[in-house]
Length: 223
Image (cartoon, rainbow, N blue to C red; front, top):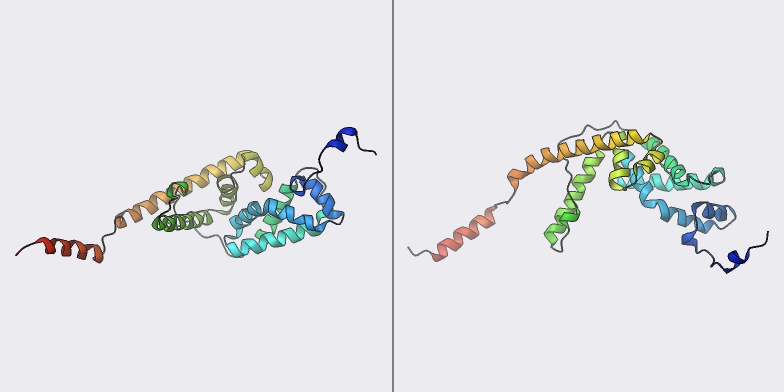
């Protein structure tokens, strides 16, 4: 089939603008280096999805790497034209679930949700606070029940739509809504408990501050 006049005048596609299906076709055609596009396109999503299951950064990276290898070996089995992201996500979830060996931990009281955007600052102490807040958030999410955690990561962290989350997890949209609502409720509860625990320690008054005030007063007093 000869190209039309319009097709001849259109600029050729750069690799980054290729659709998933076009990348797959070219990889299967021998341009294996283009598989990097797939990995860079979905790395964050798949890492977060794996992390929601295994609850460990290193393990999640291993899961994603193995998922990409499995997907590559089965690339000719993908039929499409749509649904490649879901196909990858399913392979990743299956790999992550296969690695989970320990029983689910119960939600404890050392969790919180904090608006990280509100904590951004050029001051070192605020940077430290932001890191600590992020650690607390990640722990809180880790302690959610498995099904709630997966939904919250996709909806609350990855910011996917209800429809996309449902497709990736293979569940109904109504189930996504319910689980996301319950996950947020659990996280709010732990934030309240954690805030009650931390509030008494606010405005720390250590020995140095005490000594400074005493020294300042004594220096101005005349006996």
